[in-house]
Amino acid sequence: MKKLVSILLCVVFLLSFAACTQKQPPASSPTPGQTAQPTGSTPAGEDSPKPKKDTVSIGVDGDTGTLDPYMVSGNYLVVMRQYAEALWAYEAADNIKYFLAESVDFVSDTEWLIHLRKDVTFSNGSPFTADDVIFTFDYCVEIGRAFLLASVDFEKTRKEDDYTVRLFLTRPDTTLFPIMSDIVILDAETYNPETSGKNPVGTGPYVVKDYVVNSYVSLEARDDYWGGAPAIRNVVFKNIPESAQKVNAIETGEVDFLASCPPQDADYVDSLDGVHTYAKPSVSHMCLTYNACKDSPLATKEARWAVSYAVNSQGIINVALSGQGNVAVAPFSSASVDFFPELANLHDTYKTGYNLELAKKYAEESGLVGKTVRLVTNGSDMFVTTAQIVQQALKEIGVNAEVINYDQATVRNMIAGEEDWEIYVAYMAGSSGMGLDLVYAQISKFNRSHFDWDAEAFNRFKENGETLLATTDKAKYNELFLEYTKDFTDYCFVYGIAEMSTLRACRDDIGGVSLQGLQHDFIKEWYYID
Image 1 (cartoon, one colour):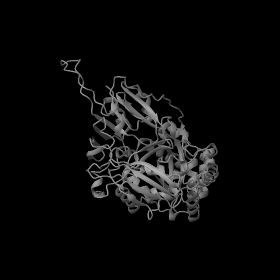
Image 2: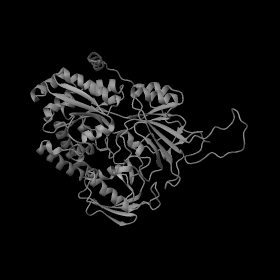
Image 3: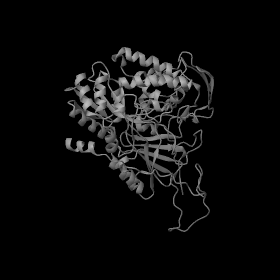
Image 4: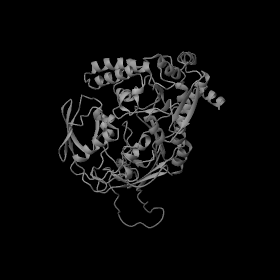
């Protein structure tokens, strides 16, 4: 294994592929929501009309072991988005889709008036009202998810009437509106966390019919959906964790769509008859998140620098991502909406990058040599390979490293605390598309025991982050964010490895698939091309 990983570390090659443009349906094809009308009988044989397809199968990975909207994470968020809805979906300032809300009046920087749809029911028949919104906000507080709504004044926020919510903020917050894309609304009358994991109730266009953990989720279209019945009646999400299995599934027709196509197989998949691949824009990036609590081997920034210098980002991109990515220049993506050139390479771990000599120097100075660190992943191939490459590099500087792979549900719960791991290998992304949101979340939004960190640094990041969130003047924001990012990269709580896009694979006879947008896929908009 050591020889293999060493070879991989030395290999430098870049694969390139042209993301195929979504094929357009012929002019005579039914538009989404329409059904082809029969024109008369046709004798049986090769000219007989084919039965209209009404089921789409989608390959995903990372089953969290539950369908409860507030427990689902990672790649299974695309599943949850089909049966549960937020007030709106935010892709960019000029790309907002309103769902359960019809509009928002911004009365001031700290007061919003949210107008709700009046024609919505949950999948169990319960009417959707402002009570459900208030219940959901309260539930977020109850389960410790209030960090998603950190600036909301829960005491003052209230129901004005059945279809109006008056939302108050404790301070201006430029990230709250996009973040609320992640707040899916629960049914106040019937929500039960004991049953929601298997039989969730939502307002979305589909309803869950069957769920077998780590196998599949079966959805059925709702005829009473407020936005009209979906064109595709049935959706089956199949949990396929292994790269080879994914390729085989799209090749044999077991699935019609891969939510995540293995980058190393992109050219082959794209060459398959009736299949194309495409890269969807993303602000996600692969990174290492460090456990900085005081008892961790990585408690000091010098120890974290040692690990960061040992990361061969280009080698990881070449091997784990098959060349599909760019070396990170910051702890968040340069595609973030608040990124500007001066934020790139602010610390030498980015400017110099991979340097085993410096890695060894800081490992010795920080006392990291001879200690053991645990790299944890969710078991996805790209993260496992990345962890193994970092493991080998750490061994070369005298640091013991263990790679431990869990399922998505286990690792999600593990990193919420600060035990049993030192380095989390994953990717980060956020609904707001803002770099600030990602780095600030590491400090004060995640439910982690950060009181065990350097208290002075923790308090400084929290206070300065809150100031930034309330800053609306662009020039002032850039000035403050530059200083914030300098400080954050120096402390090195997160080290960026690669900027990524999401590679998908789709059969040619599926129309309506969005090639744009950073966060959401709405299968209701899909249809089969005749």
